[in-house]
Length: 209
Image (cartoon, rainbow, N blue to C red; front, side, top):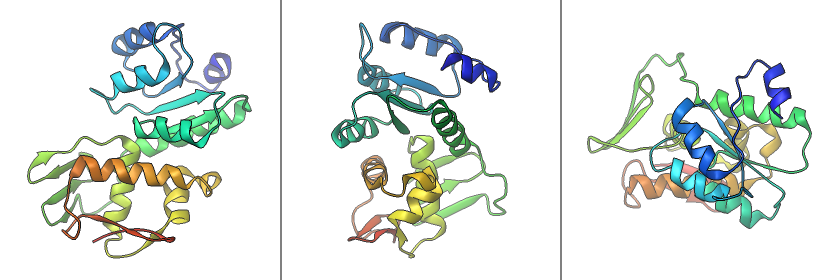
């Protein structure tokens, strides 16, 4: 993995266990983390939980565990993607590129802010405020929130959201969007029915009211 990433012009730092992974992150502050779940000393889930307490750096989990429950657990803890071993190296590179692309600021928006009730989303600063209080979102959560806010009052299907946020190969991974929506709701705490609330449209998708 390291050799292929370096050939693709990435600078790579490696760690042999979970404790070293946390030290390396604080030392180098990488743009993305590829995190195996089954690590010595501290398992990947623990490392993910620790990093999410202070950082929204994109994290891709890597594991031989392929149950949906394992994927959901990782997503609920704040992972941006989940790759099942064994995998083709081109798939890994494509997912790294896709996740990094989601973290980039969109410079094309003419209106720098989206305001929905007490919710203010800054497209230039990439910040979210509710009643003037900062809401900390991961890059994927932020992208999903912006997509829903831009098309407020319109129903976006599961396929639409998965394709636009994660990519066309994720159209069947409905648990990705379900978990991400749940995390956004929990972090914002907007009561159901109030402006900015993300409403579930059964069997179809989601809509911001």
